Length: 149
Image 1: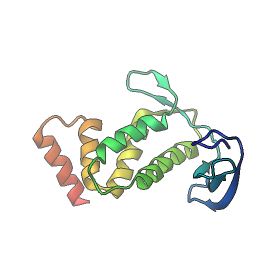
Image 2: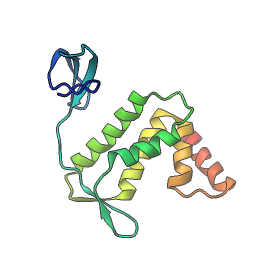
Image 3: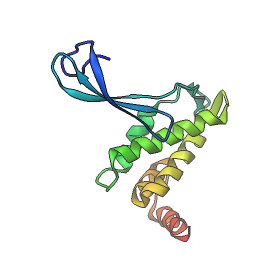
């Protein structure tokens, strides 16, 4: 593993732990500069192609999903670790479907469910864009629906 600080190719592992998604976190120390850093390992499973509304297909892009979630969670009390964990759960659920292709609607619904559990304001922000809520009445209906649950 290359050191992110000096690019030296050797480091020693100080600590290893397992996360809830079957991944491994390793705390490392560079043997040249002495800086410490973490690395994450997770199994690579096949993620289905995403079929968009216009019929085009694209690879699942974890970073694209993360950008949308981060925007929704801006200035909210949601940690980066919580966001990463939720996106990891979405990706894991897609992989567990065992399908070659999945509608973008499925991805959006999984993200909505994760945000609903994590932060209701972030959920509403995401819903405004994802569900195309264009007026106050439709936003109010979604908030009322959220409050009923």
